[in-house]
Length: 166
Image (cartoon, rainbow, N blue to C red; front, side):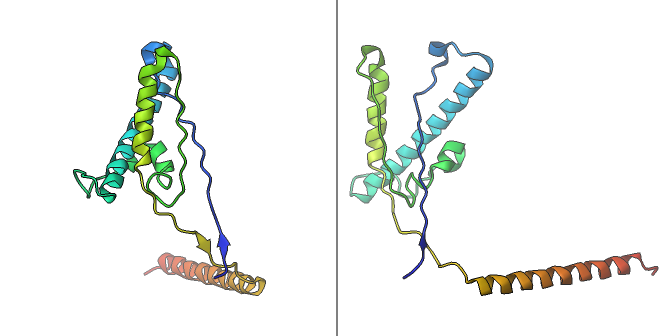
């Protein structure tokens, strides 16, 4: 079938969690760090929920198939909803550090990436119908203008009725 295919590309750099003690952040920077941490925490919950659902689909034991996925708990997860268990092909690049001082964060990142691998998306093509012809567009514009005029006439009649002494 003919149609226009549409797609969306979302690139997100999640960086690392903001450790307030480690960064020494204060004031607005501290609030921003708290918001980043909240978004990352909720993202972790979403990934864990979807990972468990993905494992359940592959025959592994999961605690619940009617699990709530908290997409609405943060702006980040709402933006990534299609990428996380939705209608998208998703690639996750996990960056780790070889430094001894970052070993805990690197291990957490690898665990997170492992959970994300279990998420299963259902991808389908998004095809929109072909655009309308110029003649159809002109006809719809004329109809729209006529309806606007009728609406204005009805509103003016209603105003006259409400003003008239009764």
